[in-house]
Image (cartoon, rainbow, N blue to C red; front, side, top):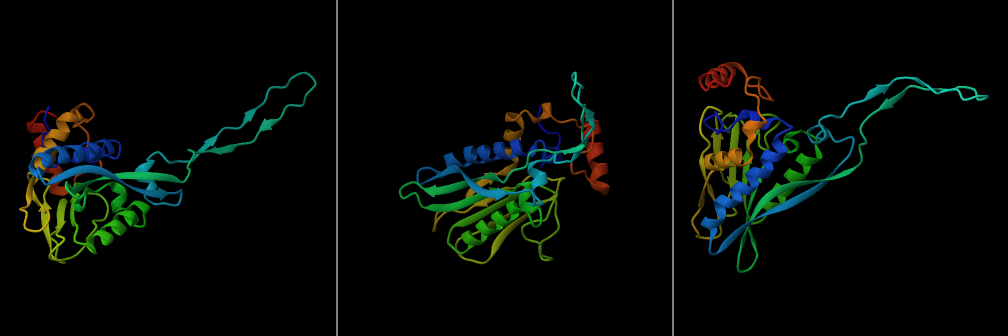
Length: 262
């Protein structure tokens, strides 16, 4: 079954489902681009690694069930001749170690030289949590890239959290795409996206005078939704996480009733 929403499906944003959605989006973007990149370029999925610890505010997006529980006081059995001891009440919590977290992104490279031409990032929840190591790592990588002539494509399909760029000049929206060309800097292209509209066809820049490659995000999402069988994991009778607000919530409920899903 296809998604009932005309563009981004807000039910895909739930923390339990998003990691798989992110994975599937990466592969569908690569599949859409590679036929158009031939013969001079190729797209490959690569990984950025950062460390997280118990003090990382973004850890809740990685380990959503972090909690402290109280274990009940138990009494040991009393073998013959041995005094019974009551085991004192303790705290029970998940084992939280310093972990290396991997986040995938897409790298477009020149086939003949292997030179990096364009980076495509689909943002994760940790990239949008203030003070999180995932956000620090993401913004550090972005700053490094913007000092070079490598193109940067940033796709944000998450309503929650803080956008990477928060400026009054950027029209408020539910989702957004930013494209920074390696040349000329510092101007960028901006696609503001409403939850009520289809996802746009964006321009993926390459090197020099080579023409931009079109990327149909709507087709990418449709393929990801069907390939991931996400309808099998979504209960459209309940609100999405995060929930829609105000008129968007009314619009969403009406849409789902029309589709006989709520």
